Length: 482
Image 1 (cartoon, rainbow, N blue to C red):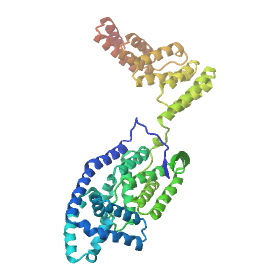
Image 2: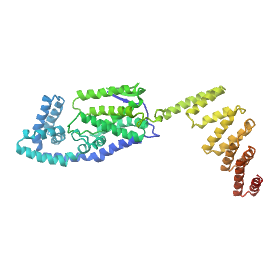
Image 3: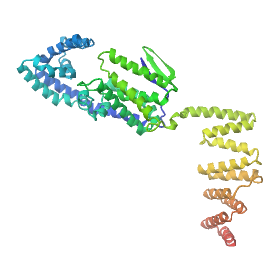
Image 4: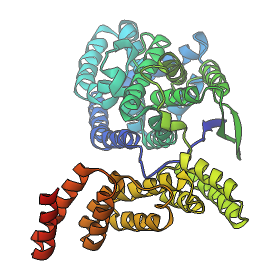
């Protein structure tokens, strides 16, 4: 059974760069660092066979597996025993030797019982040859150097093991889940905190795994503990809010909605059950459980401080916002069509509060206000449109709105000197000298001598640049008169 959260879609306009970077790092490590492991194993097997160690260790291996089955109750070891016997019958010398070499628990068993298994001479020979193979090849393999080995725990291995994988199936599966979960958590926390939380979850899951595997020589590799941490963070971020989950059961799959945190005990229960009853599957169930608890715990403990979710995370996605805008805009336009202007004004104002960057809404509000030029609202909407046009670097729009207001509303509520001054500057920017002069005349009549003097000087300088002497002289004379 598989259950994963599927509440969000990827916004490729704002790619999850850290998630993609983590995926790339895992792939690069797998290809260019772990890629040399197969050659090391081949060399180790070659030396192992030449030293005659398969003949010495083979019988001990069968006895070791039978002891584990009979006395330790590890019934799942039956499959390992059958596999080994099959390889021996089929003459698969390479894989037979590789199985003996890479079984870390068996190697530890040999070290502890070599004086019982072999004669002193055999033991000396085995120890000499096996030590060379271990130091030159086995210990140089990626899992042994950078994997998390409970018997030799180090701080660095709590991080490095997260970027190693055991094969193509392992890495592909992990990267799929890393992407499906990571882009949402990265969006919620922000790239920097997301990366630190991801690594912290991996480290904590490694510690939980170590606690349940004390003394084990078998190294842990893979990002699944970190990814389990993402699952824990994902549901903790949403809390009791109902979100969508995808589930796969046998050949059937579908979606369902449930409170996010309600699924956490289900995941934990599955991992703990599998740990106790699934046998030796090679899956680090307690690392998964540790990651789930770490992720949920970090958000629970630090969710109101260091790991606080960004406000914009819970805002609707851009496509959802577009759908909402389209629906609201259609309703407002319908009200216009029915000439219900008051309702249309309320609807456009509500939309503008949510979408302040949509100039079409201000344009509609301006035209609605223009229906009653005797009211102060027309003046305020005119100023809003002029300021909006200036911010968008549309001086021609500033002049057009200003001219329209002079015709429709100036007689009711005159514009201030600052308004005419803005129009004058906008007119000069687009070299509309006629409009600039008209704005100056309005400015002179608005009762602000300081602005009027500065505007007069600007006009004089502009006409001098254009070598329009009569005009320049006229404004110089006005300056002297003032």
